[in-house]
Image (cartoon, rainbow, N blue to C red; front, top):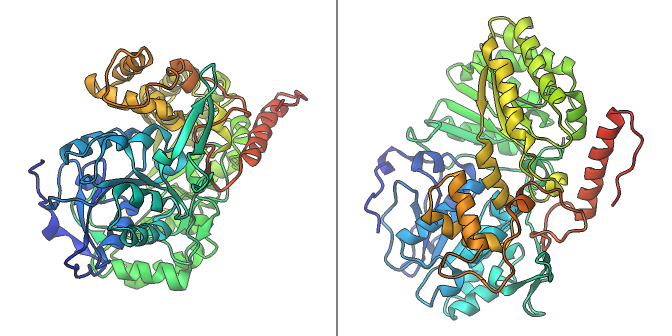
Length: 563
């Protein structure tokens, strides 16, 4: 049992009133797969924790990889919030610390029900499914109350009865109640309920209220110290074809200015002068200009305002001026690529002129830094497209002297419930990363590239089925590196390593290249086909066909993609 009890409680300012706990309250541990400073900055984690902490019938304690609150000896529920694929394997470390068996089928009556949620598990829960008793698919505002209510109703039933009852709650997925079958050649055939009383599919739950989330705790120990975060929008109307945050979170929702945003901002500014506005495309809120005007008042002269990445075409002199006036030194815009062809393929509605205009606005308004975000390895990308990105950045540097430029780059990884879910990671991406860096770094542009190797591991976890679970256990016996993952994968594939459980009666793992790099046929049964996201597969397939047709049109080729 870890001995690192909480050391930051006295530095936390809570923006909610915790409930007085009933004597017979459920004991819940809510874990985050990273350190306290990172985890407490997660708005999703904060919302789930605060929702639980405001109930009299639960006693919730927090657990991070470096700190924990004093946890009760008998745990009823153990929860994990997941926002990034590579954090998934940390679950095993956290379970081990609490002496909870890894595999759900090895847990007994005295073990807690292990539940999880977050974008990673909502998109494709299957690689981690054998470790969870319960998975919550969708927005916590809806799921957490109904989940706890159902647990309380069946509290005195057996463990199996409690878990089975949860399968009747919309948005709750019980992996053990779904049988995975494979074709003779080893391909996934279906994921079906074990009997007629279990829903055939599980639909992601979507919060559609006129308020969104905001910080529930402010602390100087957060990764963004003493910041009050306010969610302005959820999802994005642009629908870039690779984007999980856009497609999985549909429909695009905006918080009410008068009933949601202004009260949320005022609540936090009673305790801090640092404000962060969050969302995939916050400047597309229909009242964003009104929010800016409100924040431009003299009463906010001593606050420091920061905003998440904004749509390039919405960067205006007014926005840049107010950000500069409110203490921001930089702005971040996602261009994805300097190639018009690639921007058309991914549905990035952005012109070169808009990119240059955004850079000009930033410089003229007193900002001293401009951060760009791009991807390499996008479908149909060539070296010519990479050179176009480099040339664009060099031209911006030439036309806006004195403005410090930074380019953050990642490799494309396919995500479930997006049009590019059928596309594989392109091996050329590693070469393209190096090519882009060599082109711009000597010219004084800062280049921040995410590891291509870790994108391959991310793809295993974003694209895999339940056969990946033993690999996650096996990798603990090797180094936590790309080489370690490859060795663990091969060991499980060849049945050379005993990982304690996992369904070894299923076919061996497919070749490494097939799960990571191969473009899949749109008729293929996907590991997440039983999970119903915002858009059905035929709609996503039509978006993929549009993308490929766009690429062919750019080359003057009149062709048609086969189904």
